[in-house]
Image 1 (cartoon, rainbow, N blue to C red):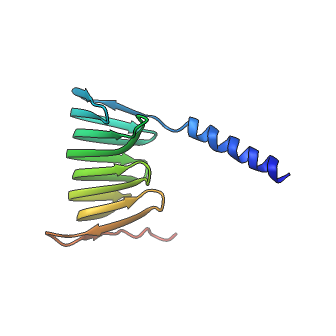
Image 2 (image 1 turned 180 degrees about the vertical axis):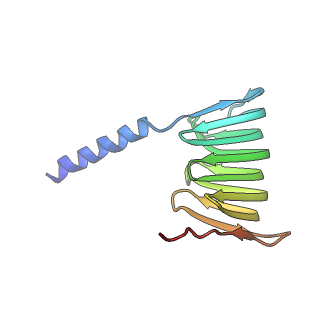
Length: 147
């Protein structure tokens, strides 16, 4: 019985891995390198319901050609159903599912706002950390009315 359950679990895991969400990209210019793909000019990358826009985006690839990290520079905007984020620089580690925003970083969730020099967002844990180097961290939190 345990062996059958184990086999079923392995089958499920392999099925989910095969159907992982692809990353689609659009830009004015595109450059392929051995270990990276560079998008320049009005870049738009989409993965599932998440959208990243910037002036330049670099996708770093592992030895098998799979994306492992994405960096974005210049007018960075990131959107997903519950949150929006803005900064001058962003880094997204696909393995750990962590996003780092630097330079006038701002995250909006509903009507709540967080601004800092650097914001680290862990998507798996759904946690945010903010740090102010040149300015203080600023938050606007609007409590929902109880009915």
